Structure formats: C-alpha cells, structure tokens
Length: 193
Image (cartoon, rainbow, N blue to C red; front, side):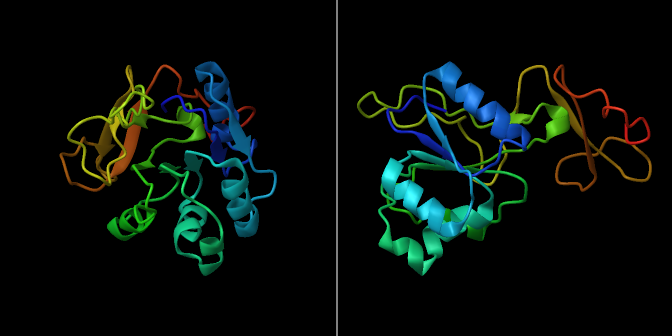
C-alpha cells in the first residue's frame, strides 16, 4: 500500500488477523490508520467524511453500501481511492459497482486466512503515489477480479477433492498452500490440526 498523508480506514476488528496485522503494517510504513470500534453503516459514512481516508478495507457488504446506499450519498466520499476486501468471491458486478466512486483508482480482492499468516497473494500497490503522474503501481497484466500473485516463498496448488491430484487452470478443487508463515496446527486442538 503506498504512503499517503491521508489515513486508511479499516472496517475490521482486532479479533481478526488482519485487524492485528494491518495496523502494524501501517506503523512500519509510516502511515496511520483508523480502526472502527463499531462497524455500522452510519459510522462508516461519518468516518469517511471526517477522516478523509484514501483507502477503505472491509467486507464487501460495507464497501458496497458506501457506494450504493442512498444515505451514503449525503456524505463526502471523494477521498477514497482504493477499496480492499477479502473473505468472499468478488463478482464483476461488485467490482464494477465499487469503481463507480469518481475518485476510485483500484479495487483489490485479497486471498488469505489466519492459518496462512493472513495473506497469500498480493497485487502490490507499492510505489510513490505522491509523485506527479505516478498513480498506483499494481502488478501488470492481472485481470480485474484476480487475487494477484503469490507472495515470495509461498506455493499453491488446486487439488482434486477425490484423488488429491493437482489440477490445471480453470478446474475446481481444494486450495492447498505452503508458506514459511503458515500455522502448523491449532493450539490445543490436535483433532482440528
């Protein structure tokens, strides 16, 4: 995520892995973020208007409401340039709806879970967005609905549910990954591990 003098607004709680990791990431990058103590539509709209975040991260339900809810139209949302989400498949309709905010530059759908260290893929929005004409640098040639490329040292394959064999492109199966930050099991729950 590029540096910005504006904050990022996180519509996630600290009980979620990203609610712990993203604030640390912001401090490390010199950015600041606002965490919502109570995530309700009206609170989100008020926070966007008051704090003028350049980025809003949350589940699609809240992001869509920020664009489509008639009540949201009463608030200034012009600062929002990036929306990040995860936790569900983003359809073309959702993607196109989120891009309807006039100032929107990028919609990012991430893939990950607590067990894999939060994220396994990236669309890399690093770079200096304050330089004239620089904009946001995303990984080139990625389709709009992708979750991006694997992080370094991460391996992923899709397996056939019945045979466990690796599948090819555009085939449905179970996602298996390996990463140096993956959890080795669940604390005091060997049966779940």
